[in-house]
Figure (cartoon, rainbow, N blue to C red):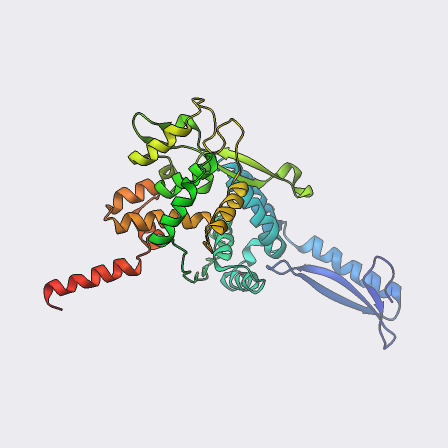
Length: 371
């Protein structure tokens, strides 16, 4: 049995074994050395001499060489805090706290290599995280590694990150018949919330953008809707130990998300019927009290259930709007700007879903050329 607080043990062969720290591997793992003696005192004295020799002979390492990867993670996230939105910082903090620091924080930076990052990725996937979530985590890790490499000029190893492929999911889009049924439902006994959901179906608004929309953002005279804010619920870092969250209203997710959307005549008329003539009032409530995204999701679930629609989420509304626009022959650049996308590739790859009717219509065009 070892003496309390010491790594000195009596072996089965009667000798005493003293273990001491020789150093650390680049991965952060401790490297041990061993000394043996016929008595406890002899083994202890040998280990003490070895420790002293290591201290006296080893050159004083540079400050960064003594620091673990966690140190650079903390530096990076503090530097990012003043550059990004609060919601983005909270996301970074969550990724760092839950995934990167527990698994990689104890490593020495120069020990992080492609294989170690690949093992990290496989562990995340093995925990049941989605490919998208793992990609997000690896994206943060890549930024931290890039920052860390600058602290070790010419010495930091090249690290390649292989991102997991995301399986393409079939996105739910309302058929034209389902859309007509849903619109008819929303127009019956319409209130501010139903108006908001219908407006999203006619403009492609994101749920956070709809929740943050105030009447001052709608011009009935010009028949336009201005998107310049979004609402979301995020973790409250000041009370994170209590599992608390808070609702924040801030700028949209990107510069291209700030946009002006023309309203159709019917959409403008509907807005005119509910205009409370209070610019600061939120569209979803008609007052200066907001309705947050979780509440809107619950309302949407209630509405779709009552009119017999299944598998409908708020993003279904946005995808449906994009699909109807394409079916109507919408110019793709204009559609991309209305949706607030950075480029048309995002619009085409993620938001445009060709219906069977549209595919058949296009196939029928082959008859014109005799095929």
